[in-house]
Image (cartoon, rainbow, N blue to C red):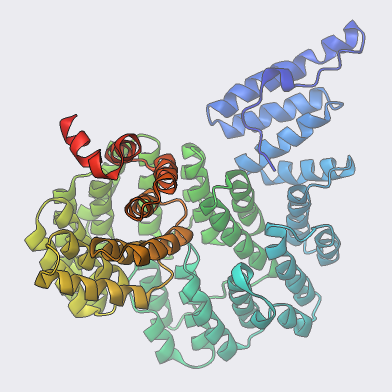
Length: 560
């Protein structure tokens, strides 16, 4: 599916075969269409959607205008118009799965689960439909009272690969909705490993299930207050108030499905589909805060900063999400080129009464993105000084982040102290093990004592997290550095398979292939890495390898 935000003028289908009177009747449609097109180019989605609707009404015979009006209604978050246009498109014979899914969302909002089931039958099982299908089937069954069928459809043992994570999360929601609290708590615990925007909410779902099962102390233990939303949920529980179900109605379950699909599609750079599912999540469940956080994330990625800020304004107060919303708002402002405004927002929050470690970490992140690494390290340091003791083991991340900033600010002794402090708290944290190991390796000659420690750290990280492409890259680079070229090539190929769009990893594989004598393949990998490299320095280094080969690239760069 393509959302046609940028439309060439000649694409508008005027009825030129009609007499002059008919041609004149299309003029208002063409006028509205052209202005709407430029509004879309300027990211004025609400205006563009209204103008495209005017064009459609002025020339109802132009079927493609209805599709384009639907595209813009989705992007603008205009639920009534999007639903109405999806019905019109279907009545005209449209069978695209995105239109069907929009109609299905409308049926779920109306609680017409027979219509949901009928529309589900029109999804063909390819791509995202393969993920959505069994989940829609399960909640349609649950809504009509067939919980046994619903649980059978959401049995993780029946599914593999990518789909299984979706099934695990949805089964947890279903068990909680059915009041099977012990099973729900266990399912939420499993689902939390998936991460994503839903991660903080899944923790609350687990705690709610534990509390409802009578395990209040265990619920409180799950809600260790290491972030503001979790701390707010803990405060509610301590005050004798329920945390609340994540899914109180089946439509909300489909919203959580859409939230997860939107995030995964965005990571795959399938932007139009990501926008569709983000907006559908808000259509299905405007009462679920994660819907609006997801809408804001997806729209910000596509350059729709005003619409993203409007979505963040829909997140309600009182749930401990203020810091998260503020951080996202700052991200949106930065992406829109308003970095100073973002900094002022974060600085005011850090200096306000009641500021938290998260607020100082947010300010540090802003400095980091601006490459002000010394300022970033200082902000992380303030967070440690004021809140580190109260965070217990969780303070490891502040030490780790300050260590990275000190490293980039050329304060290696300070960075080394922070990394060791982090590992003292969490000796088996793969990210810290890898970063410290790689840094020691870069700073030590082969066979030095630090080299042996670096090897041990990286090898331990690779065992603990074998699916992390960055860690496997460190392992391969270490093997290459020690002269084990054949093993390095195998390891780096594995790293590239794990991170196929990471320029540094692809470039390392090119280096290994060159040293193995596979010069053509090495150049292919460097050229591939160049296509993903963003930093100018990295692009220069890769281009030098392509121009002069690995052996001469360093010397030639030094001469420029």
